[in-house]
Amino acid sequence: AQRVTQPEKLLSVFKGAPVELKCNYSYSGSPELFWYVQYSRQRLQLLLRHISRESIKGFTADLNKGETSFHLKKPFAQEEDSAMYYCALRWNTGNQFYFGTGTSLTVIP
Amino acid sequence: DVKVTQSSRYLVKRTGEKVFLECVQDMDHENMFWYRQDPGLGLRLIYFSYDVKMKEKGDIPEGYSVSREKKERFSLILESASTNQTSMYLCASSLSLTGELFFGEGSRLTVL
Image (tube, rainbow over all chains, first blue to last red; front, side, top):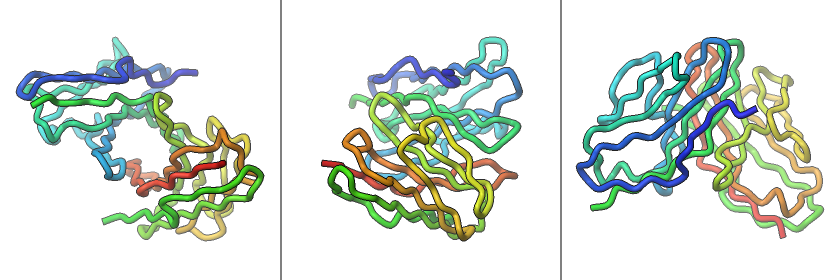
């Protein structure tokens, strides 16, 4: 069953433009949602999680339970934002994480 | 900082060989995971373990087994490697309370 969907495999934006990486999930309980990022030649790392409700590196993400979405947004993209981004869902009844297929973001100078 | 270390960054093996991938974490995390990462498919969970000697299958356990004899170490075993197991393998660990996953740098396995 597809639990996390990231519809865009590739996304290119110009520096300074707004960026939105889409994530939709299917889960009947109360999920915990995360965004993970992998910069070139670095390990995968946590970017932000919905329960923190904080902005990291200018990125924000709001959990919309009605639309079952957790889109990642940044008003002004920077070149250093170029990376692979994964949306992830953690079951509230366990410790399993399920990841989307990822979106490769390229910020064009 | 939490450190998750995977013993081999790059491996090349032949079809039919037995392969061991080792992962060690230094922060006393209960949970450890093995994922494989493939372009266009994202991260897919192979196995996870929530305690010593405990393991549960993820989405794609076929062709793999795991071992967790000590809390800090989680091994992935390919009993008889096949070419379709050529992939990047990621180990991760987490505390149940906080849930954040910490990843290793990955082990890129090529099976010829």
